[in-house]
Image (cartoon, rainbow, N blue to C red; front, side, top):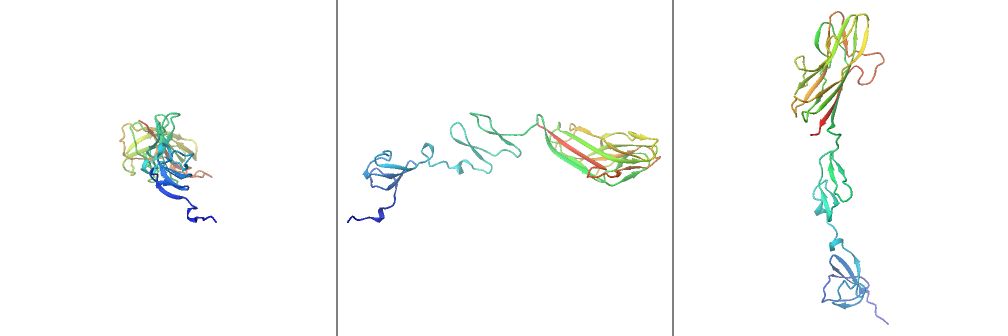
Length: 276
């Protein structure tokens, strides 16, 4: 009866191929990053002689390497890998807000910045205030903002700030009023002596016939940051003005059935950054 060697019913790992070693069927060796199994006993039969003595079990990556170790290619969080003209390459992380742009066939990808020509939207701000402020007597500055402000910080002297504002006003007979925007650098504590960005004048809205008059006064304004200091924060509020003392003027008035967060007094800004 034939003797069955149960210990030989398995692969026999022999390590790296050695031309002086006698190999038998089911011996397994490694060479050039690949692994081979012996299919015919022999000595000095190179692993490249695959059809007669060896069959390949597993193959290494390209160029005879043991695959690509991406941990040595991608060295920092945010790195990505791509293929350049000769092999795998790393593209380091871009800056916040950039996007990955393809340059087409035969070109490497790059990080690019989203831009709308020379300008891109940089920031928004808004406040609303719904407390009545009444005044009787001429004044060219009346605090109707209750300490609320919007603010912006120029990144370039060519930055553009677009303001929108509105206020609901109620007056009695024979009265005039106006509105404006006041600005202060570095502080939200704004007063009559600070910089006027735009002012309608106290006589901009006037009537002498109606006994009870309601209006939503608006005043959009565009500010180019020429003359302002880059990196300094500027605060802006809406103010009121009264022309005569014949009748009381009520700012931030509550129109009947009005609603929402911008129905009595509000200011908003959009900051357009100049892409130098």
